[in-house]
Length: 275
Image (tube, rainbow, N blue to C red; front, side, top):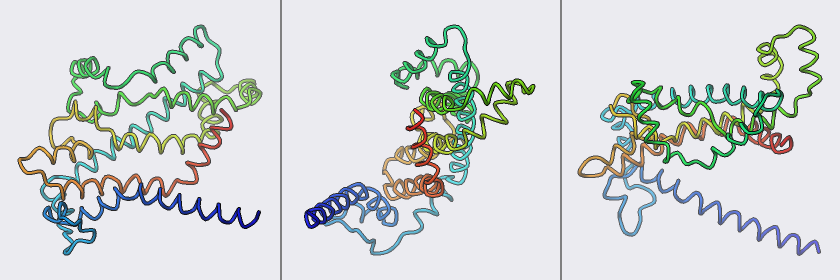
């Protein structure tokens, strides 16, 4: 029995290693190609380790393609969008979880139903509205549509439902206003949810491609996903620069996930249990 268990463990380990190799293959190829010249990228047989490391692929992005401004634009939209979405989603989630008002069930049902509406179906009316508001080719035009999220509201509602009603009633009896209850009592309790949901929002905002592609025009306002796509606009596509830009785009997400990995798993686990 013990021998069978050991054999099964070895088989499972080999299966997981094989799956890890499959999932890591595109990343390793991207990293290798980012340091090659264009001729080596499509060489046959494939060249895994470049004969000469072309570090200038990275410097060229900053000197000729304005990737310094591109990264700042992406950080601004990702951080601002994440903080704003956490604030508004937590407010809405708290309201749905702890307040009684007419039409609450219908309104929450509509919020959940909006999860089934694809972003592509709302592009045209959204573009017309933002054109009238003068937000075309503006970074705030990228941020504003993503300040609320049906998934975020649902996630925060599930978390807020675990807060004891007696705690909130005691605060009201002590004279706390509703604003003070949220900022002094509810927000500290939601910190694990903020951490886990914030990382999800940050990755989504950083990788946001469709809507920024529609409204951003000038090179000074491009985010990194759109800037990498814009590298293909020339006659000869610089695949080595595209790979270098892709490596740069991945690094902030890896750093955030590596730093906050404990909060991610703790928040997701707590949210699952509380849900």
